[in-house]
Length: 69
Image 1 (cartoon, rainbow, N blue to C red):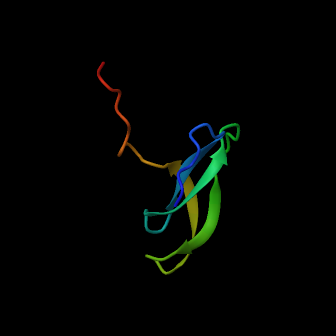
Image 2: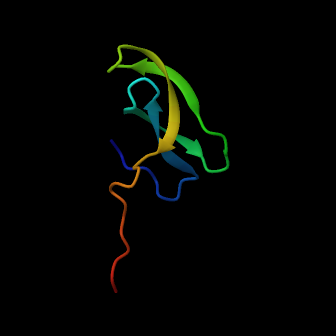
């Protein structure tokens, strides 16, 4: 998969299932959009459709730390 442009006006978000609590889907949204996304998608762990809500993509993992000069 190609890398996203760092100058993009969109940010990457993860979608968490209400049933299983797993992040299965990722999508992008505009930085200007302040509403939280909610989508109804298939949950492969629960094996049924569920409501997915927006969270941060990384939730604290894989964050880039500032370099020491």
